[in-house]
Image 1 (cartoon, rainbow, N blue to C red):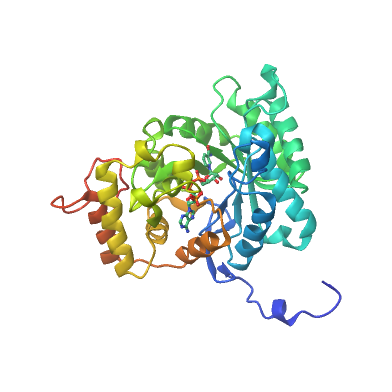
Image 2: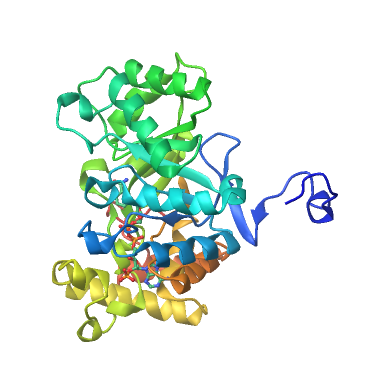
Length: 363
Ligand SMILES: NC(=O)c1ccc[n+]([C@@H]2O[C@H](COP(=O)([O-])OP(=O)(O)OC[C@H]3O[C@@H](n4cnc5c(N)ncnc54)[C@H](OP(=O)(O)O)[C@@H]3O)[C@@H](O)[C@H]2O)c1
């Protein structure tokens, strides 16, 4: 792009905008950072032939990234350890950025540190100053960027004083190597400890918490109550595995038709997760989705986006078509009556409104 020439397409952009390429944005926590309603999980992007556990190779990933930008899916989620501690998810994103430098500012790039991946000493993992600094420098190298927009702590570190971890990130923020902080796999108590400690820091407050959640299973037991806590405290809850690894899609409605290439078959978990009750719930949800002109996946994502405390959703996609379908869910606005139908479908026949006290999302 020749920056010295006028660009009417930018000049005519309003001073402020709430969307990009048709995708609505929302705030991350109580910050000015805006992220696409639907983001992109990149856990399964890597080099499958190496046995790293990835499902999407580099060529397919680049197509997914190109299309994600076109669909406004610009909140990208990765981690240093993804795919057998190989760093391959970050590495492929980095290679794409190198070829598409003009897209760097369009993407809000989030990565995570904690787990060891390049050594076995006690200092190769955790949230000590040493480990954070070394890990973040390695992330930058793989991602081929100068800064990370959102740095997640991938887990709580019971050994390192919280102040030490926060001070390390604050130093990275002063150098503009990290822009915002978030945490992942935290309990309510751990989140509260961080909220208390971060009072002493000017920039280092936790904007988001990334924990497991999907509308079938709710939050993981160990971390229950975090969504409610997020809603109360203004932290964005970012759900990992929001589609229950693909269970919330049409492909398992006829279990006998699921086959290799479908993630839950490939990962050997379908029998475990697809109980008769779950299948019945999926089928009820599918009926609602069909009547609303949506797919089951889109209904699940659109409904999640209405839950108090819920931030953006970050489903993984294994094809361009999945990115397109997921992006469309970011624009769906469900009425209260439609949300009630989802809750009733989750609750089951004869149970009326969604069960209170269940793991399922609160109305
Ligand atoms: N913080 C953490 O500890 C943590 C842990 C896990 C995940 N995460 C993050 O969360 C992201 C998402 O989690 P996830 O990959 O576990 O699971 P997910 O997003 O719940 O499910 C992804 C799977 O759903 C299927 N899918 C996606 N879009 C679809 C569509 N439009 N129609 C039909 N099927 C569709 C695909 O299955 P097929 O492969 O069968 O096509 C895909 O592999 C990860 O990429 C990662 O960034 C974070």
